[in-house]
Image 1 (spheres, rainbow, N blue to C red):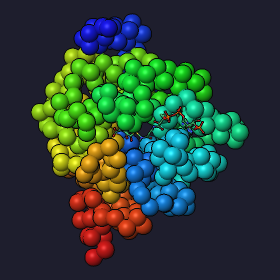
Image 2 (spheres, rainbow, N blue to C red):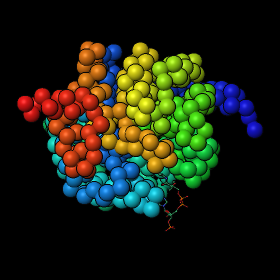
Image 3 (cartoon, rainbow, N blue to C red):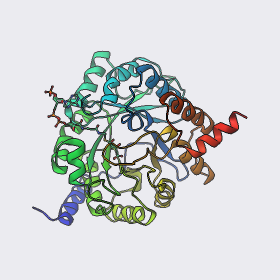
Image 4 (cartoon, protein in one colour):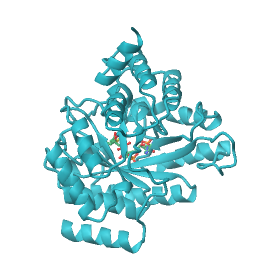
Amino acid sequence: MACPRRRLFSALSALRASGRRFSTEARLTADHVRIVEVGARDGLQNEKKSISLETKIQLIEKLARTGVTTIEAGSFVPAKWVPQMASTAEICEYLLQSPPPCQHAIAYNYLVPNIKGLEGLVKIMDRLGAAAETDGSETKPAARTEISLFAAATESFSKANTNCTVQESLERIKPIVALAKEKKIRVRGYVSVALGCPYEGPDVSPSKVAEITATLLEMGADEVSVADTTGMGTAPRTQKLLQTLKAAGIASSDLALHFHDTYGQALVNTVVALEHGIRIFDSSVGGLGGCPYSKGATGNISTEDLVHTLHSLGMHTGVNLEEMSRIGAWISSELGRHNDSRAGKATFARLSE
Ligand SMILES: CC(C)(COP(=O)([O-])OP(=O)([O-])OC[C@H]1O[C@@H](n2cnc3c(N)ncnc32)[C@H](O)[C@@H]1OP(=O)([O-])[O-])[C@@H](O)C(=O)NCCC(=O)NCCSC(=O)C[C@@](C)(O)CC(=O)[O-]
């Protein structure tokens, strides 16, 4: 078996040989951050109480009106694994047939764990005659369809989350990317437990994360979201990870960071990532979310806290914080849970004065 360093080198050599350096996304300016709103998928997937289809669609459409440009809308997973996502096919059908509720270009993203998941999405698109991308001729841009696939940085988490080894999960990804490319569907990759694993602790190897990230990019992912699933990441370890990714030749423009706020470190880690040139961040409205494999895990960094901090630093997100705070208050009350966004609660309280 090749040593990790050699495997990393070979993944990176292949990446360099492919000549692929940057994602196909429009290049971000230095002060522009793209936010990937994951509340309707990562945020809702662990909610025990069944949430109606109508509420999920309302949430997605409200989010689209805030100016956010990428929204995770669901996942094509077996209902026995994630019951809350069982309505994804219906959400997808609705979104494919409805004009976007906003004037700006928007992408709806679906998580797929295997080829069967993507086939489910493609079947719906084919039946409705829907293309993943628009030809740009419309005066009002139609929504784009994207997918996310995922691998983990540790064997234990891979086994718990996908019932296979890391290597097997990478093998599963090959046909997914091939079919997505054929259908012109943009592909996001995730590397879970990049800064801490519920089973193996906080010391996840940055080189292993770099190796998997490079492999996903080399396979054809358009960007990779490096995920702190457990929220164990700290500023020094986030810095070390980003330095390792850079040393491995991975461009910051190919990366997104996905922080959970379990230990209250998500904003600090965001600032570290900004300093390393990262301009894509995942977050969930109201800090929705949790992790079934990680005791005590809270949700993603809240979109309202992220936007508030980014705007205070002079960065542009295109997201209306007041609108986002209204949604955070609304969805928290719909779900009967605490609103986990401090900036969201404060902004909403001021609006209600
Ligand atoms: C990967 C599997 C499917 C393997 O699960 P498995 O049980 O090993 O799958 P299988 O291939 O043996 O199939 C078992 C049954 O499921 C069916 N099946 C198989 N695939 C599908 C599908 N796509 N859609 C619908 N049905 C499917 C399949 O047809 C079969 O049906 P049966 O013959 O028993 O009637 C499972 O482990 C799984 O779904 N895992 C995903 C769990 C999940 O969604 N976790 C949360 C998302 S990841 C995450 O949140 C982290 C992230 C991304 O946010 C970043 C971070 O913070 O880390």
